[in-house]
Length: 313
Image (cartoon, rainbow, N blue to C red; front, top):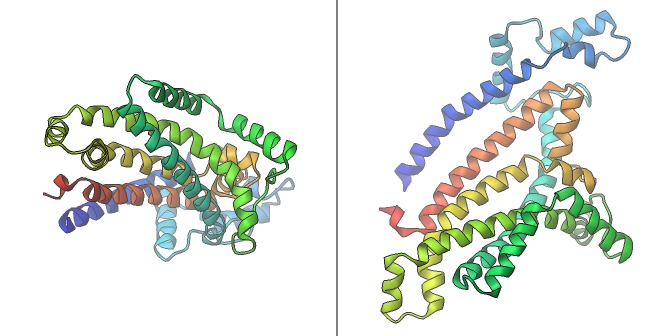
């Protein structure tokens, strides 16, 4: 397992370099002069010249990439020209918000989706299977922004149980924080739970028809042990992969959901940066997101060893 971990980490390094080149290169393809956009309506030539010098816009592309990589290796992702704040500081402010939202959404998705998939596979063709498939169709088909608006109308406007929007730090008021985050977390978790349910059901149906499951039943093991110990552990591999990808997607920013519930997370940060042509923020956020994706995939690979003993050999 240690050798596997070393090999995977060694593969991540060139992948991260390639990703950084794509992030920087594609950003430069956007039309227009970012200095003129940032200079405002007056577009003072002195201000434009200063921005060109500060952002190294007059240098060649490889030189600008070298300046950027040098800063990244020293923990400097640049400075937001709009906010006059370090990008690393902006990321540190927004990432915990999105991280909490993504974690709560994944917990809701796993708690609902995986058990529903197991029950649907075990009770194939029955009422539970029908109900689980209806739920999956509902979750996949329902737009997040529409479900969010309905939840706001019901729980905030009609019942008054939860706040309609906004964000409160858990360090200030944990109760108010959970009340503000539960609806957006459910909106995101609902769609992921539907996908997890379908994948869990498919994997369980395939595993339940395997020879070793029939052998376990022939040995007299009770159905609960057969399903949870022998079948589920072998069916979790594709579910773990999907979970890692979905969590990475959530960490990149749930733009519509964050807009509906006015949550100051990664999604709003990157949208504002794109519209404002704030190159440093866009590059920093995308680099952090790509790194999170690769880290989650590495953790998913390690989780395979935990749930499937055959992979250890």
